[in-house]
Image (cartoon, rainbow, N blue to C red; front, top):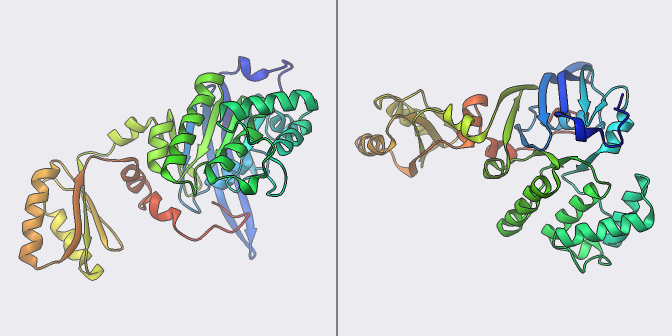
Length: 342
């Protein structure tokens, strides 16, 4: 159950504490183990990124932590409340901004905010004052009476965040907060997400398919694959696990990718490369020298390429090494059916 304090999160070192969290579905008379035993901790004031490919269990875990889906097994405390015995207490103390948004296109923006706050027991006057303050802070001033359908994509996402924050939660879940936004709108929203923590002390738990977003925003990153957490650490800690430089070769003819992989693996100190469609990705100790030698080998073999590069490791390289697939590629795959691991 929840603490008896008015604002229990003020005394919490951990705003999320989960052990053995699991969810099993029945699909076509078979059991689908979407999440198989997640252990995770999130400290007060952190911005934590939650990364996972389609079908890895990311969405299912998020839905359990936000009380939208009951766990099959395991325990969790969220914002000082037990997930199983007091889901209403969890809901009162968190904010949740879904990927699809929550505002009605035909309503007025301010009315949507006030109506949401009223569900949390705030008076109309208090909700209006709080909502208008958030409008000013999130660069929505002057849009109180506008309909969401008339707003830009960035404005609508900031309106979603206002709705998620108006009842003063100290833990907010952001599900793909910048999906579909142009680069400028994304960068602006990053600034606002940082301000949640820096100016309000809000703990932020976000999912994203943008590795640059996770790198720029998050204090710590959790990677889930096949329903379990497979890595946790700061962006720099995770990238340091990937030794050497990354070579990426894009071949003109995908059928020649295995031969390119053989040439890459023959480079001094190279690790076994991976073939992903028309790309061969490998790691070598010294990318510059290896690049020159590889180009010569490709020329001798008569292999045509459409691109080649050497660079320092990125979070996508970390994800590729952990899961065998690129998060960017998985983001473009088919949507996972509702109620199944995602």
